[in-house]
Image 1 (cartoon, rainbow, N blue to C red):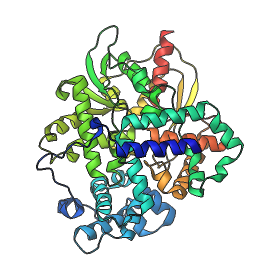
Image 2 (cartoon, helix red, strand yellow):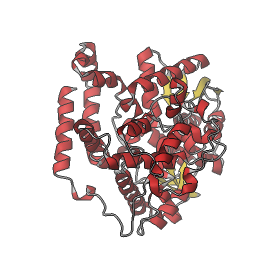
Image 3 (spheres, one colour):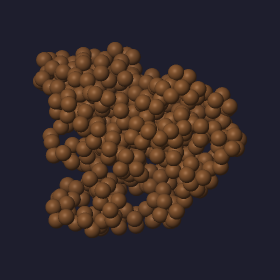
Image 4 (cartoon, rainbow, N blue to C red):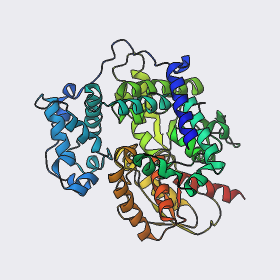
Length: 468
């Protein structure tokens, strides 16, 4: 662990000192302008009617019963900042980062409040104002958001080193000897969240162009993600297999960039725009004009919400605005896409299994996709779906929330694991890698054998079983 941490630090420092030319930030297009809370359309800021229907759906309000920790309270704070009655202060910054960004309030809201846009602009204002800046915080954000997660080659290099650490038995030995006690308290508490790194990443498992043997009726692009690529590359392979089984030709660009959701949700709007441009360029290089694709497929709930907003992110960019508009019309979550085209039913009887379904916040609240994953699960022979109590209640992952707000995150995870136990299911399906990392940590902490799995992986297994 300690040599690995040093290696990560040195790699990141070298990357910062000697960035490769293909990773240099793309220059902003002429005419592209930043947006601030004060620049938002007044209609967006005035949507909230203060009815309070969002209050029971907000995890932080539920835990504290404090108005400032509710969507309604935060919206009033943001409105005050936009209208010049409140400065962007450290207190304001801490409140906006205490929010999970789960968007449950948007689902509950009868007035259609665009909380996502206000929330992201508020965090961007906080970072521009620098009210939360400390030497440690700035270093961590520079290392991760502007360093590792903008350089896929570096992220993969770190992933391979972590894979060696885990597969060699060093991780198990460090834990057995109790060496984690030597870590600072915050790192010691985060260590169990370390995700399991796959032996092979997506490029090794998936060809750039794959076509079903019987011929394709549709042509789609495939997004492999960043964390998904390292920790759940098998889910990407399963997704391609499911698309092939449903008569789709699949184009998967090599060495893909982060979608930018981590940056957009954490106030790094310029970097988020840069990532959006790079993903559009990557897909066009492999697949040609975006308009000629039937869909661009994502299998990560949190990423999907952000990917579907590239049109807003780049709407002031003369070079990318139209391409981003087409991109947004093409991006489809894998469950959404299969449901729309009518999925092929797996053949065979199938082994009996009981499964429950946890809803990724951004899949159900951000993308409004709730019934489609359940429909696909019910399509699988032998599978019994048991509803999870509070299935759409946040598990506490929320991007990097389990790192920045570990105490609240742990409370939400405990609540989620207790609800899973009530179902009696030993398999939990969910469609977001962040949730999977969080739930797997919960399973390990309890020492049980519950499997955390993507719904598409279960469908891919059923297709393979039907062929055997």
